Every structure is written in C-alpha cells, then in structure tokens.
Length: 229
Image 1 (cartoon, rainbow, N blue to C red):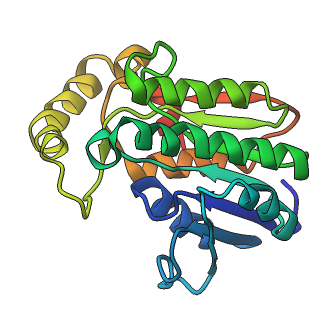
Image 2 (cartoon, rainbow, N blue to C red; image 1 turned 90 degrees about the vertical axis):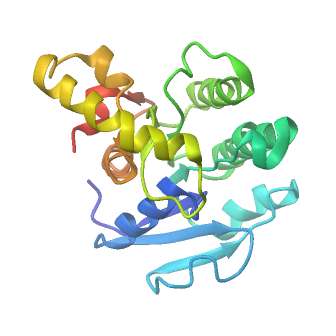
C-alpha cells in the first residue's frame, strides 16, 4: 500500500454508512478525508475532515470538484427513500448523482479507485431502487477504474430517522436469523447474502478493500465476504 497521503472523497457523508466511512477513514494515519455535504456544518464535529459544500443538482460542480480536490479513492454512499423523495428524486440520488461523479472522476483522476454502497438484489433488480443501483454498478464495470461494490442486506444501525420496518426487522428478525445461520450454516454464502449486517462492518470492509485495489479490477462484497475485515 502506498506510503504517501491517501485522499478520500466521500459522497453521502451524512448517511448511515457514510458517517461510518468518515469516522473510520479519518482515524487512519496517512489519510485526508473530504466529505461532500449539501450544507456547511454537516460534518463539523470532526476536525480531521474537510467539508466540501457540493450542489449535486449543478452539472458544472462535478468536473470542478475533481479539478480542485485531489482524490485517490471516491466512496459513493448516497441514499434516499421513495417516501422521502418520490420515485424521480430517488432515482436522481441513487443513480444520477453517483454516475455523474464516476464520469467526472474518470475524466480528471484516471488513477483513482471507487468504493460503492449498492444493495443485495442489485444483480437481479426489480423496482426503481434496485434498478438504479444496477445502473450504477454497470457504469462502474465500464469506467476503467478499479472499484469495489458492497451489496449489504438489511443494515443494522440506530438511525436518527425513525423507520418502523427497520426497527421491527432489527429487533424481531435479525437476532434469530443471525443465530440460526451461525449455528446451522456458518459457511453458507447464500444465506449470509441476505443476513442483516451492521453499518460499521459494511464501512470497514468497503474501506479496507478500496484502499488496496489495483489494476482495473471490480470486486463484489456480499454475504460472508462483506464480513471479512
């Protein structure tokens, strides 16, 4: 791994996995972290992180970003919900913004690497959310930059935003599911693919893999691979 400073840019720095990426990356030696935020002060609690106020709706911002800021690794952890943004808003956040960042990075930082937070099911998508994830994965496979794609299932975290379905799943479904897999099928990649996973584990796996990518490889992290730190 290179000994010089690694410049990491994180899009989606205020989301569940994004916050973990910011925290874990900024704690490493030899790393400079830039957090893309819509408003100033969103990541002000961490002095090791440089905030970059970014207007995702302005096409000019994308090329300007990578002309102004060094980037060795770009993490894409943007996310929204259909309830919050509607279908068109969800597609913009989940597909259009990441693809615009990938394209701009390819033009201006051809030696960079990319880590992307996708979702389980993106390899056989149905519905706007998974189709958006699949479109981003396709662009990554054709961008000629080394990349790693994480496909987590249900994320285990304590969101500030209340989501009833996730609370029920975390408290009622996750414990017995994980217990059963560990006891009866500890090596089953298929079952682990759908198992709930802590956001910190996803961030750690994605960070470790992305910092060590080489060539033009595109790696997929899901199931047990997502839990190997």
